[in-house]
Length: 246
Image (cartoon, rainbow, N blue to C red; front, side, top):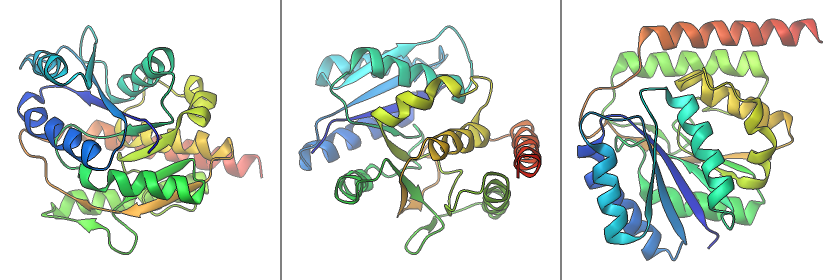
């Protein structure tokens, strides 16, 4: 199978990656996928980068990009993407994956297979198509997510059920065409929808694959009120822009 680079932003995820990284590498090996994990760490106080570097020495399959402080999810992904462009030139796909264990690595081979067989540029792991759902979910977070997706579809016009999913694979060639348009200031929901928006405008062929969203293994969710407000404002601005240019 084609080479896949998993870009994984981290902040205080040492306990989670100790379990997650071996699971990912096992899935890659069992399915004969040539892949690597790039941990993009924001100077985690809990030593996440040290744990990842040790795994890299042991397996040869983990690289670490260290950043000087807590700079946010959006900039972590942008820096990670650019690192891949510069240092992993044989890769065909980049995979966005959370470090908290909520994104099951077991479905990654099926996502890659769907992209290869269907000629898709983007495969989104979706909670909102048949076969996908929230696992042991927080009702409040589920409601926020569903509302965010309704707002995102209305503001972007993209016919995708789960625009806010942070678990995706993207072809490198089309990602290169949009990465410089992304705002490093955006995080979470805003970054994920903004990325899809630019990929869609670039002509990306997008599909979804069902998955069950799991609760994080350790630690607390980083979704906050400020991020929700920022997302709503971004969607409203995007909606107004679409209406003006219609």
